[in-house]
Length: 122
Image 1 (tube, helix red, strand yellow):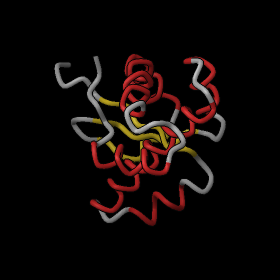
Image 2 (image 1 turned 45 degrees about the horizontal axis):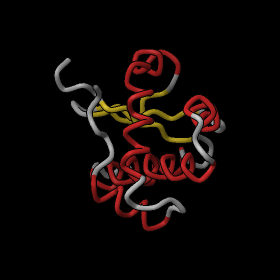
Image 3 (image 1 turned 90 degrees about the vertical axis):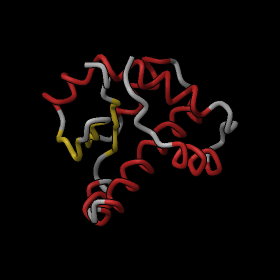
């Protein structure tokens, strides 16, 4: 099981903007993380790492990558958009903390964010 890379405050903020029930978003995020966790090394090889900590690794992926994830997990369009937005909000929060917000915002004009939780037991 991977760690939970999306902070509670980010989930609350995203849920307020998303068109999915707030109680559903954490379940969707967990479902996506269960899929992404085992793919971490694949992401490391294929995509630019934007940020890494003991708990998570953030990547920039091509536009449309979230469509692939949504298809693979049979997510509705609204569900996919909500989870993607949670990943974006989390990356921007990291950017604000590390004084990299402008850098991340610029990158997000041409790419999508994807954050993978790191298993703390590994």
